[in-house]
Amino acid sequence: MPFGIADNKRIRVIINTDPANEADDQYAIVHALLTPRFHIAGIIAAHFGTRTATTMEESYAEASKLLKLMEMEDAVPLYRGAPHALKDASTPVVSEGAELIVREALNDDPLPLYVIFLGPLTDLASAYLMEPRIADRLTAVWIGGGTYPHGAEEFNLQNDIKAANTVFQSPIPLWQVPKNVYSMIRVSLAELAVRVRPYGEIGRYLYEQLVEFNLLPRHGARWPKGEMWMLGDSPAVSLLIDDHTFEYDLRKAPYIREDMSYEDREDGRIIRVYRYVDSRFTLEDMYAKLVLFHAYNEEKGRTSS
Image (cartoon, rainbow, N blue to C red; front, side, top):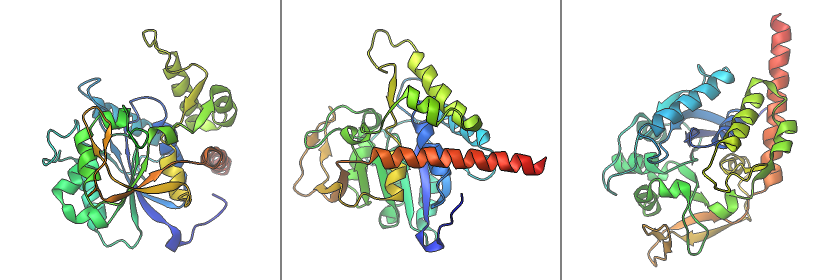
């Protein structure tokens, strides 16, 4: 990057992601990897429900592919998360990913730790159940949950409601980006063809894997819509570049029922719930970093030759 970041403005980031689920996690992962403010402590592959018996391993393979395309496989460690949701609200699913969260939270690094969750909260709930002392040593940013005040069906929440309730009832600082807000990051395929596809192997892959997902038969369903996408995981990155100070509410954490509706709790602890994310800031920052990364790689190639 043509600019530096003062050490006291940097943060540690763990990315918890289910990129084999669909096609937008990939954009958030690449954006995070190209953000100089972030020291990436690791990527954790997350499960995404029961679509197959191996969803976490599929996520691991997809994250590994992204790192190889960016030639970062030796620079950013990749870990396996929980292969399935919590069985109950008090028993963790022990995994490499949960152990990474505990280890990073308890170490003496002076940089603050943020863990972004682009799928279910299984690994955070498990880490907390394994070691409650992590609660005041990290901040979690979750892309998930239905619209307030009532809640609704939502994919990331659906994949582990017990984990979400465990986190909501814990003292872990939590920034929630619910469905109505993460859906604001709309792009067209034409926009991605112009702003992403031309920029190296990773740009081409980001574009092509999304287009291919759009072409998959959906048994008559109207999703995806065909010519657009919502890069709904990307706010987890842009909110750590600028936290949109005036665009969230401090709310009492609800209890989440099995139908994913919210039940108000008078004794609920306070969490940060976003009502708006700046899509221009989010997308333009990602596009610019892709261009700069491509230019750097081209220059490196010319220098080495």
